[in-house]
Length: 239
Length: 241
Image (cartoon, rainbow over all chains, first blue to last red):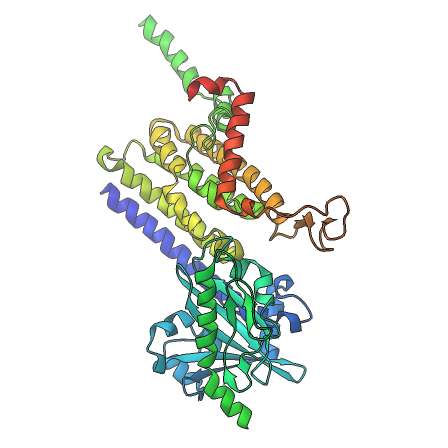
């Protein structure tokens, strides 16, 4: 009797708290996601994303960012289809890359964020791959020729602090990607995070000592992740 | 007859414990030094190594532990006579887990950044040996108010070490203090944002932030030095261990 009473009371308290805080949790998670996307174009913004208030983030996201979702053929997906895929909001920002990564490649949908920087369009793509211990992901901003990287941010689930986790914790890692090009002439090469230091000026960045597997994961994630968007890029270039 | 009437007033006096008498004060101050959970009892080391890279998350962690420990002690003590002794551990766990989940949900709603930083370690307060240890050793045998104070005292003792370790790790590892709050201080580093700019300063040009301090082993060293220093200064402790 005692145990039943105790369990019921604690379950009730927690359920009430959880439902009460749910809108705030969802708002916080959405904001976290928006900050991560905006951080990819940090250098183009008037103010660092880190020092922005929540409302400023919401405002910029609402006014300067156009979000579309793509299928694997590079075609735009309507809001109803996003909802049909299980994302209630129906916007690209609601797409959960973690769920998408588990689906077979041809069924996935991809979020694409287009930042309008006073007429210049910057395309922010989301990529996801595997690090050493668990998944890693990032947002990469490309210039409108779809070649030059203007910013990149990374995050991870469980990389080692001080080693693999440096991809997120050390701002210099993301900064190294600025100015790199993902095409060599016309062929797609991506960006290599190279152990022992960058060899090519345009397509390599320095690896992190002691985090080779995480760095290889980043290379692979960028290589594969951006390629998913290629059909869309090709179509946009030909227009 | 005369004996019983003479005894009862004495009993009455004994029952009236002052709110902050000598014994009660001792419950709070003892764990800060003579009976510190980390440096003397050597409990709760895991989270002390893990969350102490920055001062601000350590402060939040301290507040969370104070809340959980004080109220789980209070609740256990209130229920101590009705808890069936065969399942007392499980009852204690339910109480702790409820309080910890409350803290976690609240933190997620009001300070998402710190929630992300502390991640799993808020949840791990459930298995923090300090909490279980105090419930089993103190709250099951003492009155609610005394248990509540004991909880606050032990959590403060834990938090004091946590914040002290985090202070050294943040200053020497990252060159900042209280990063992530409006009070953030940039102390030493290679750019003009810092108070001491190692890129231009002649005196501190050699200085670099020590990456070792960012890693958990540094916390182990710092706690080790603290234990040594405390024992060198407080001779009472030497015989205990």
